[in-house]
Length: 137
Image (tube, rainbow, N blue to C red; front, side, top):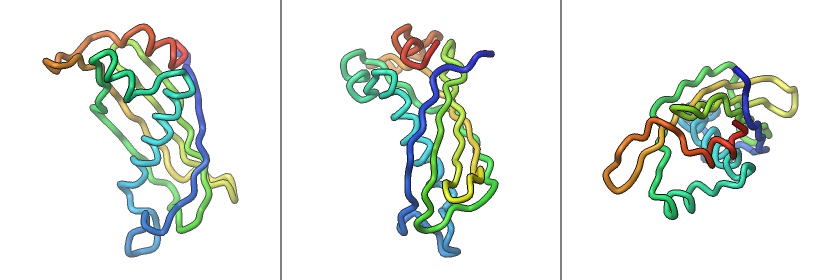
């Protein structure tokens, strides 16, 4: 399977993302993935908020997985990479978080989304063609 568009964002761990042990709380990795996901769509010319308003079509996340390898800490700079893997029946995006200081992969993940037509919340079984193009397929 050929991957589509890849986009990276550079981020910095803020203090408020830490848990009592001084490492990034596990749920915040999904936030970092989401920042990269929205940037991936923007890089393809799609503003998801505007798209949903203009086309009555949403793309809810239906599944996520995360593999925690090495913890990020306060102030760590990192790259979160989003790579579109599929955009046929569902959108599949792989994520990788790499700490900049030592180039260590800290986290890997995957998110899956479907297309839902409003107002009836009808699940579509094809991703719209303009979204496929924006993601490099």
